[in-house]
Image 1: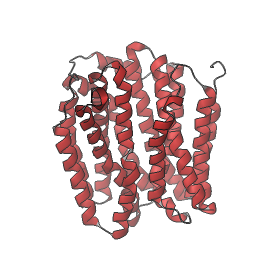
Image 2: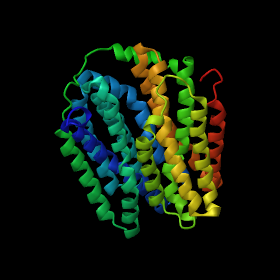
Image 3: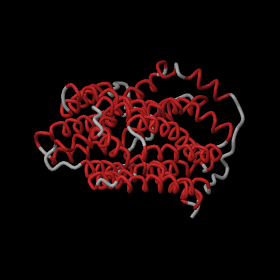
Image 4: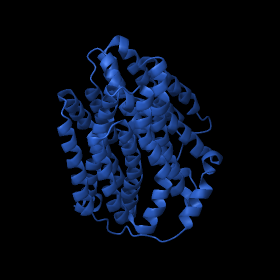
Length: 387
């Protein structure tokens, strides 16, 4: 096999799958463990939100260091830090969990940037989209099995098994990562990117295309973050609801939608208002279905998982593809990095801001608030002048 499916790149996809397997398990284990230790939803939200908030903060720095030293050197260093972070979960309490999430956030900023930039630099133009798509799919695949594995360990009270799984993931990512190679992805000593990053933050508000996409992405990601953080706890209030099945359905729909609907994603540089509004409508209906499931039961719960998966599968690639056409060529990569950071910010805010709402009201009302956010974005997505 050649190109994006050659052995060196298959190894990178395996590495991606292993790396994100830990998070698929921890997304369920941390809320459950936090609740058992007496933490309220606000505290759980802060611990969970610290992960991607840190990732967002370190992305620009990660890009500069990868440019200077090359993706492989950075990748090998960050895998050692990630192994230490995973070990923290085995012997620490809530404070240790917070520290581990921060370390994981730093690692993910460097890991995702190293692999994506390495794949982009190493592959010819015709194979780059396939390489990035494979990376994205492998980052979501652990979400199909990981939640069920986490629930099984939790229900059995298998702390030792959890520790062994974290060690196995840390060792596996280390072995695969240290043997990985990315031919053609060399370091580029230059300070041009640093200047560009500093000057480009203002473009988030000055560039109307970037501003519109960023607002949509950060708002939708608040809903995604609220689901990831609190569904493991909320599922207990839903008749016949199971958090593992919910997260498995959502992750499975994301993967299938990326395959089945990939040709439906606009790739012409135009803003398709009805298409984006439809995606935001799916997000809104998903959030409201989850909210209503506390009364109506598991059918609405799992319907929400399906709609949420479709929305999550389509929104990010649609907005990213649009921006690759309309952003200035000279600063496109930096501005795309800032756009990716808005997704990180939204997910972290979904955990941090929605936790207090759940504390003072209920999970059901919190997801209704998420639906209201979705409704507001349906109108915001409309743009009269586009085809």
